Image 1 (cartoon, rainbow, N blue to C red):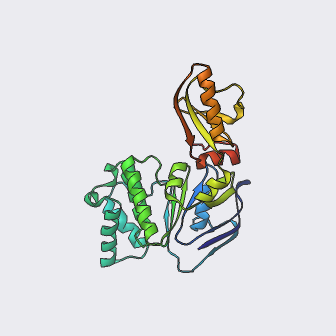
Image 2: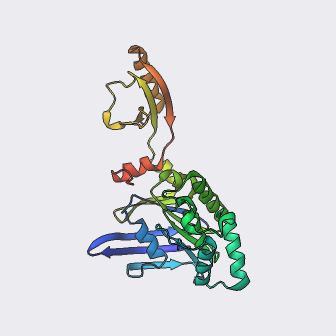
Image 3: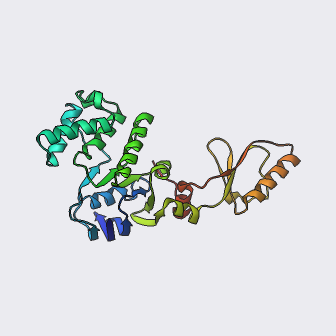
Length: 293
C-alpha cells in the first residue's frame, strides 16, 4: 500500500531520518518501534504529509487514499464538548448535514463516549481525551490510520478501548501505522514492525519473523544461591522482580546446571522457567540501548 524509498530529513543540520526505505502492506497493522527521539514522529509526519520538506520518494497504491492522523499531542478544544470537537473535524474532512451528524454519533459510540458527547472536554480524563483524539481522525472513514503514541498516559480501560478499536479497524481492512515505544503493545496488536533508532531502520518484518530470527533462548531464575559462578556474567541480567534472566543457546542444559548447583549449595529456587522471547530484548541486542521513556 505504501512504499518509502530513501527518505531523508534534517533539522538544523541534524539527521532526523537517514535513508529510510520500507513497504507497508495493505490491511496490516504496522508497528513503528523506537525510543523517544528515534525518528518515529518525524517519519509518520512525512507519511501523512504534515512534513513536506524531505528527500526521497513515497508511493501510495492509490491517489484516493484517505488518511486519518492521530498526533502524539492532544489536538482538541477543551472548552467545548466532545460532540462539537467531532463536528469541527468532520467539517474539515468535508462532511456536512445528515452525514456529519450520523458519523459523529457513530464515532462517539466507537470510542466509548456516547454518554459524554455533550460534556466539555476539560472534564474528561486523560484516557478519554486520547480516545476522542483518535475519534477525530476516524470521521471520514480513512483507509490509512496513523497513530503516534496513542496510549501515552492512558488508564487501563481506555487502553483496552483503543486496542478494541484497532482490532475493529483491522477487521474492516484498514491499514494502521502504530508508533510506540511500548513493546508489549506492538507485540499484542501489530502484524509487522520496524525498529528505528537515530533516524535509521535497524530491522523490520513480521512480528513472528523478528522473534524467530533474533530472539535468544533464555531462562528465568529466582531464588537463593542458584547461579553457578561458572556462568558468563555478560549473559545474565537482573529482573525488576529480583530474579535473573540468563541468555543461553542450551536452555534445558542450563536449567539442569542451575538445579544441580542449587542442590549442592542448599539453595532455594522460587521460580525457574523458560522465558518467551520479547521484542524489547531484540531491540536491545540490535541497538545496544534500552527503550527510553
